[in-house]
Length: 212
Image (cartoon, rainbow, N blue to C red; front, side, top):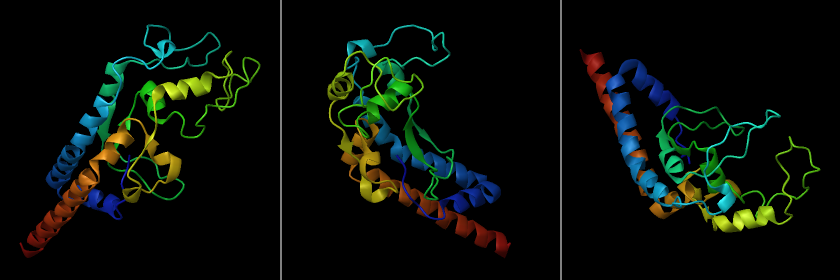
């Protein structure tokens, strides 16, 4: 989840270079502004796996072939990994860069959040004969596995499109995007206010530096 603010990268760099105390204050204020969404998002993570074979159990991370095993559902771990970040991400194809955002760093949590966005009825079924390196198809023995998997997770909620650079299916989710939509823009407004306040504080400090 990210919000577009033009000039934010430049402001953050200026704050860090000239007034690190204001840079730290901005990060704290934005983390506070997004805290409500994080708390609500964590509450939407089911206490147990929606599917029995998606439940957590100890096992090695990789198959003998070297391929990574499908991540397993652990409610506590997923909730813990829903967090705020102020580390800028790489610039996307549209030229935007996420600076402040909420992310679920747990692989199973990311699957639960977004499964069904691209293929609402599940990935095209091929079965065990398919290329094991192809992650765009279903390798299950059950032709209906993808559809049953997604249906067990429940519906996707449309996020707050107006305040984001992303559109359509990329703005749908079950946890973070649901909490973001239900917030109805209050967190976004608080983030914008924090950035505006930081800009004004920085301008005042620059004036003081010049005068003295």
